Image (cartoon, rainbow, N blue to C red):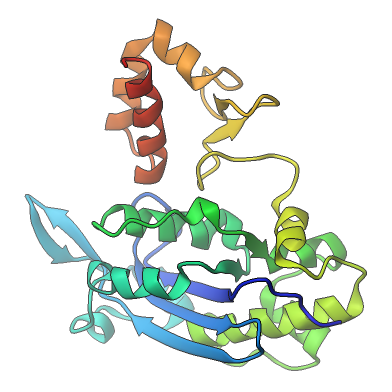
Length: 263
């Protein structure tokens, strides 16, 4: 069954310094952009991860355990552009598109949003539909990407944990899933199918919408409470949140709600 596209669909994958959405950084980004007319384009970026130290950007060390997974070491990215330097180009590539990835709803997309939040590039990822191929897989044949590639495509995934290899494998797996299962074929419906019943206001899952579409805490002592209601009676909690180790994108939502109460 052919995938029905109303707009371009960008398959993407990230290799990173670790799995902490708030503090880790991208070291490789790869995409495969499929257009409604059947044409496509792809690109892979190596990225130098940086952190601010007293206002000065310094290269972030890639931990050995991360390098052991994706094979990228500090010296491999020392002369590569930072994400800030490629952000505008990446944003231009995905603007007006929908996105697809493997376990991307829970990791790649939130981390990408964090990287954009550290730049001056404005892009609203929330406007894009997101198809998570991993969710389709786990709903039907729970395994990892390597097993999914073998199961659906009948091939071994060589160079696994290379962003380029994983990106193309994700694309091929989705095409095979469309053939195998009675699942939606439009991106809007696939995004809904893979999103699950819970709707999140942020990408890290710290803020959810209630049945009225109002932002609520999804963690901590105020879990289930509306964010605005908590800020009205406990203004110190807002200060604790913004000083804490929360993703920048999540903090921006807290700040917007807090400032709206003071208008």
